[in-house]
Length: 180
Image (tube, rainbow, N blue to C red; front, side, top):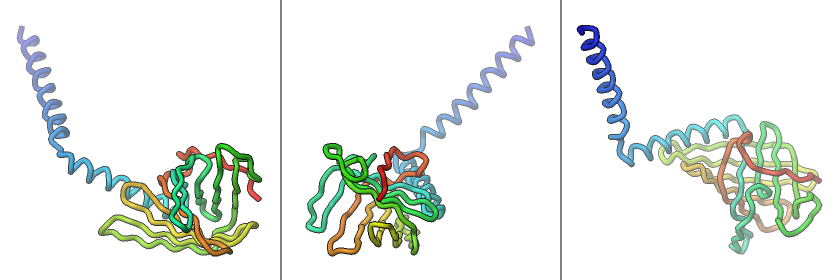
């Protein structure tokens, strides 16, 4: 009988301890949870930029006149690897030189500069890419929630802006066409 009471007391105390732990987790406010998620996203973004291993999967493209078009993120992207970058635009309705309705420029990164604003948890990345198609300046603005904007300017007047999600290269959903 003593053994039965002892087992019952141990089981009851164990369940109370687990109940306290889950109660502490549930007492986190929405603001604290959001702050923790932003901090996690900030660290992930910082690691991606330091390792030069990320993809900007673009949901929108915008031209120099401000005309903004929704696009497919798996064929419209900027991919950055340690020494090279891939810039691709594509269309679901046409066939282009890259096989996905647009153009793919793959080249070497010759300039790389990262500026971090620790207070706002934002980043600004400037890079210069030399490809067989041309030379391009890319300026990235990365927000704390993992959203990013990249402004591409090249040999000719005007620019193209990619707007979407910044993701690790191994988690991206992109399809890279043939590069010129």
